[in-house]
Amino acid sequence: AARTVSPLSSNQDFRYLHAPDQHCIPTSQLRFHLRQLHINTSRASDIHYPGHHLVALLVHDDYESEL
Image 1 (cartoon, rainbow, N blue to C red):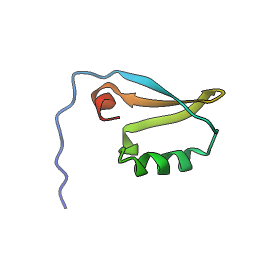
Image 2: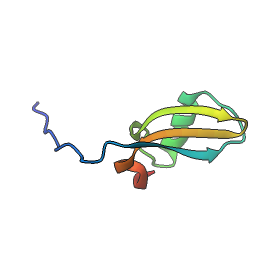
Image 3: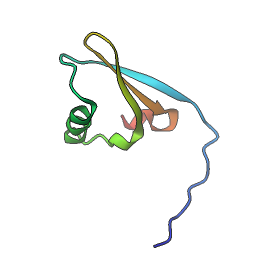
């Protein structure tokens, strides 16, 4: 099957989206919960816990509005 290639975005920036989190759970479990909320988890390049009760998702600027 052939893949279609989409044109490159002129915007190459990424940003962290921060959200409160009551429990520090494994990222696989967090991705599972995000999928249950109908959030495309492949848009998050990185997930980590920068602080107590805080989760950070690294996303491309073009996909920020989807999350």
